[in-house]
Amino acid sequence: MTPEKNSNPRQLRLSPRLVEMLGTLPKDSLKVWRDGTLNHFGRLFQKARKRIATKMGNPRIQAIHFHTLRHWKRSTEYHKTKDLVYVSRLLGHKNIGNTLKYIQLQVSDDDSFICKAAKSLTEVVGLVESGFDYVCKLEDGTQIFRKRK
Image: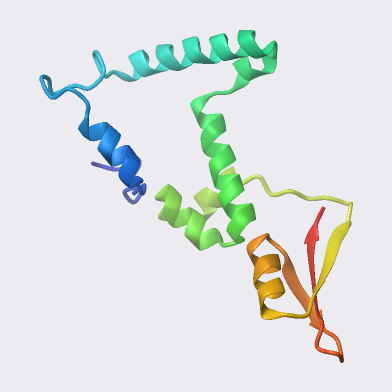
């Protein structure tokens, strides 16, 4: 696949289950979906979005676009990993400045944290896996962790 705008190619990992599901699609044509044009996919997305907005009684869903999902993904990945280089590579950007344009950095005046203490390695691993950051170690060996509310 040729990347757009001189960027690097994007690679997505597919689960074995998805690969299996894709393998069951009919192979009697070169095209999986009707005409395969971007307009066709856009119309399908608009219909699905309208159906979901109506069913959920939430007209704001109509404001969601493909680009909204792209912004959400890159912002989520950045806030999960705090690794700008990783997100830039994930998106296929050659210039990290392009990634910075799209990541929604959250600036908050609220410095509220959830604090937890861990005494065992199991507790430390559990806190780190759930997004807590290390703060310090007390004299008795207890380690303090925190994450934003």
